[in-house]
Amino acid sequence: MSQINQNIDQIFKSCRRIAVVGLSDKPWRASHGVAKLMQRGGYQIIPVNPALEEVLGEKCYPSLGDVPGEIDLVDIFRRAEYVDEIVDQAVEKGVKAVWMQLGIVNQKAAEKALKAGLQVVMDRCWAIEYGKLAT
Image 1 (cartoon, rainbow, N blue to C red):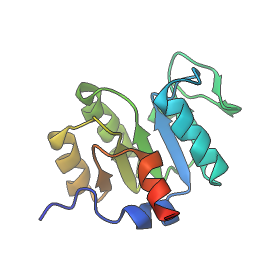
Image 2: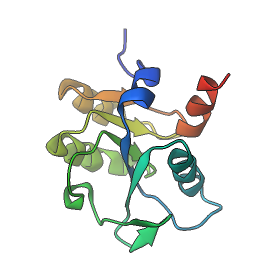
Image 3: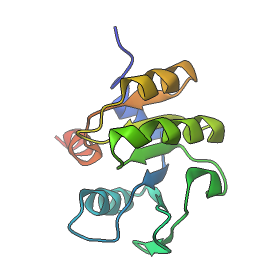
């Protein structure tokens, strides 16, 4: 049985500092709406996007390696072909979990993250899963 998409409830409880890779400053983009929901839920977001200085009132970093301190969860809003590199950075950074948003599937990267001891969520929307907790 696959360990992917297991313990989502635990991730919500234990992962409070979230790096959002590919976070957009455009309010109509999914990444923006999800990150705003995270903030409203009491999570600390860390925008990761080399093209931006600040998003949602938070300093933006060019890569995961540039983020100071520990990161609990890496939420990925990038196309599947970029996920391998992001997972490598997440493993190096020592994060607890990686989350590939709805429509993002990279089995190789997921297996690499699992082998490194990270929890993995793939092809799921953080906001939809978070909404299920309230029901």
